Length: 210
Image 1 (cartoon, rainbow, N blue to C red):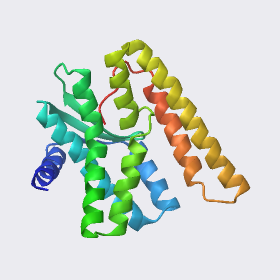
Image 2: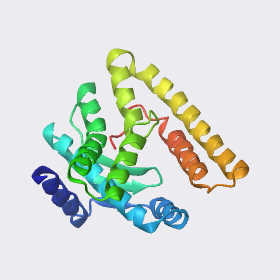
Image 3: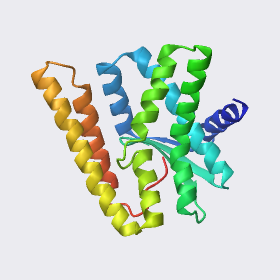
């Protein structure tokens, strides 16, 4: 907990030093999430997201990277580092450190019977970010793994196609729920967001750590 607290202080210091960049697209996504969802649940998810980014910061510090800035845009949160040359194994560590923090708090929540919404937010955010879609952590981790054992160019091609296919599948599932079951449009909006994010990121050779 002490390490996480120190990373949260560093997260705040990034904001103070003008290292936090917020785009209108992020505000739009956040507004849609608040409108179509429960603001209380959204608050717990945002807390889980801050701790998630703290995990990335902790891993970055461990391998000697310094933060250039944190960008909040339509595709989510993206940490940009003063990058030194990193191995694919280090990239893999950076990608998985965020979800690892989420599952760490899931474990603590179960053991100490913390707020169920806190547990659910970390569980859902951890699972969601492990989806093999660019630009989510799972997609970047799979890219780093495939690049290390295969070929970076082919790994990028495979991840680009896989990301779009999964995002289209989520979008079609959301459309079916919305039209056939008269359900909320949340899943459809999520699928469209994933599709847009994948299309924006699939042309990158080395995906930024998130």
